[in-house]
Image (cartoon, rainbow, N blue to C red; front, top):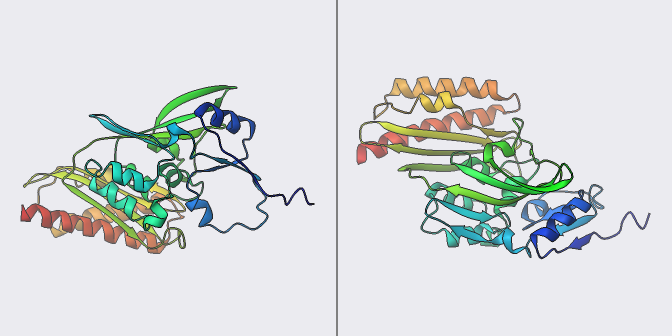
Length: 294
């Protein structure tokens, strides 16, 4: 009995190869980046699923941030505050707002980009925003009995039900965000994703418009305990429309959104449905206002 209640063993690899070897030999160990996601949840003591912890913060590749003319490479264990500092002049405003909305500096100084994306049962701020961009993820791990590296688009990190799709002992090691221009960007956190995930909605819009029409419109609604919702038909119903959108067009598109949301998942609660439709209608009204004021 005493052995079952032992304190967890904490491993601190100092290189990528050491990390991957530990991950291979201890597949049930908990990966620890900033720890804010884990510490914010309730787990009974002694926690039965894992007795070992692998810390990521001493692996240089996991905290490195690099920039090229086309994209920003962010190590998965880089803190949100460091991403905000390094990317101050280059991050899309909607991404910067999503990062800041995670919490005060006491949280963002610890929370990491990989941790935010990889909480097993919650989809949070970064999944909501990054789903609208061309984002590639680097995964490393033991596949078919040998270490491999592969790149996948962000959408392939999650199943339709919102669960993670990491294979074997894979670790998310790098997030690559390609630069894009958008003159209308919106992020809204409605409710409390950690405390009440069944009611909260994270709503994001990234769009381009001229004075007379919408050139490109992308919108995503994230339901923390369900997944990320994005529908091409809804987006197409706004893209190429003349501005300002009239009341009938907004109502028609809103009805389309409501219908596709109801088909998307029965786990989306009535309050989440109402909040998403309201946020969507508000985004179109704001888009109208911005186009008229130019």
